[in-house]
Amino acid sequence: MKPYMIVKQTLDFILALIGMLLLWPFFLIIAVVIKSTSKGPVLFRQKRLGRNKKEFYILKFRTMRTDTPSDMPTHLLQDPDFFITKVGKFLRKTSLDELPQIINILKGDMSIVGPRPALWNQYDLIAERDKYGANDIKPGLTGWAQVNGRDELPNEVKAKLDGEYTQRISLGLDLKVFCMTILSVLKSDGVREGAVSTEAPPNTKGASL
Image (cartoon, rainbow, N blue to C red; front, side, top):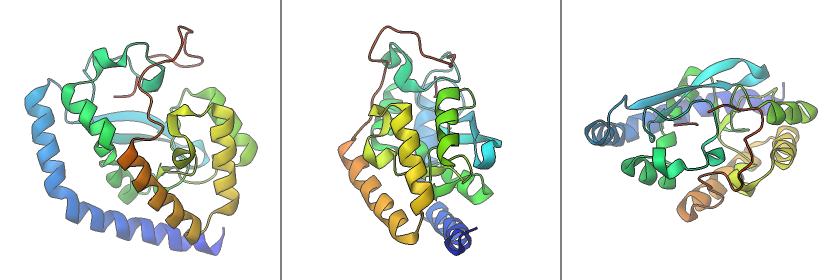
């Protein structure tokens, strides 16, 4: 293990704890708005793959209806607007739906920066990441691939970028990714809702809420 990885784990926990203490009022407000505007739970849990492909449940604020098909990336849905709630559109555009992943970081399932955790059935992406060792580190709240294209990138390119991050991982790169993430969120770069063709989505069945 690289020396920085020990520092990284400590920084992840400290920063996530500070984030939770500072942001809990926003958690409460968002929870109340979600509960009062649509039926269903406040949080959405979905099976993802973590370090060494160990399964865990990622947490997000629920942004879609409870009858949405499960276990499919939302950008592969043919008509995601049908399932996304009005509040959910705002949460997704601002990435506020990702805030509960601070809990995943505190639990040790995730890091602040790393490859985004793949769905358990995204076999193509998982296989591509295996080529670069990108499945061997903790997934992140944000990552090198996300600030270089996000949903717009094909799996081969995502995996290559994730592998590049795995090889170059350092405090400097993490800071760069974090700053680029803030800019990407402000500009909503690379966010795509819905499939771009009528082809059936490969190796997946059903959408992430």
